[in-house]
Length: 317
DNA sequence: AACGCATACAACCGCATGGAA
DNA sequence: ATTCCATGCGGTTGTATGCGT
Image (tube, rainbow, N blue to C red):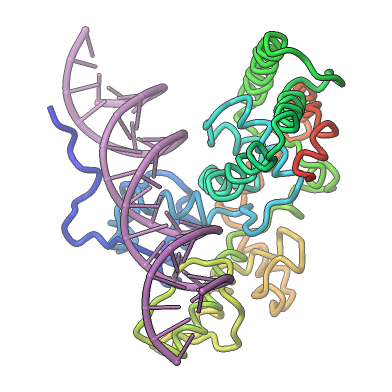
């Protein structure tokens, strides 16, 4: 029996999301929380497949997503984890809570794959290639190795590392599916909120880009690009000040600290009672999500002890 | 300035999985 | 035990943008 399509193909919009659609989706999730995606198109009026809504939320609108350049630390971590786990992007993403699996996957495919290939093919000298292969093997394996090892040893070590990684994953999953925080930046942060900007940022950037585009080219809708630059024009084609509308929707953003997190939140006036009112179920859900990381951090040293120090010169040529 | 190619990334597609009925 | 549904996941595609000629 064939599986029915996840959504009616007729009348379902595809392609890039507009800021208006984003706002509709985020406001819905704010009220109802994520989940029950099947109901989202019906309840929001979005002419999108439920799957598309979920994907848009998890990959772009969800709070806590950091976009843009990957740090060296993140890069190394991805390489390490990819070596251990393979293309298990969701598993890898669980170690980089600010990044989505999609982002990591894209980054791997567009940057890291190439970098590694270059590293392996970069030298004409055969010996040098061997030396680098050995370095690669050393650097992608156990933290405890400070010298290069034979292939057999390397395979054994890899198995051990996989075992450790699995253990760490189990640990992570056993504590209420909280992500394992490895990033030093996150470790250092006194509260999770400072590294957990709301989705406001994501849409704020997007909106600004949209406004820029819509003023110069009304017929073209832009969606999503973190690279879109700012514009002072924040009205859409219908004259609605989207930034204001957005602010009214997401004024709670300031509750999550980080004043530089949101361009919109900067213009907020302090109003405690208003803030309290805006402290919705959605926020509680967010806060719940951020709780308990300290507990998770315990006993996660197996994986966090990966020898980043051994790979610090990984891309040095 | 125009064109073509390369790159980056958002979004889609189809399959897998787990849970409820 | 079986079916159905919701969601998760990884691979792939489409398109905007950048860059070189």
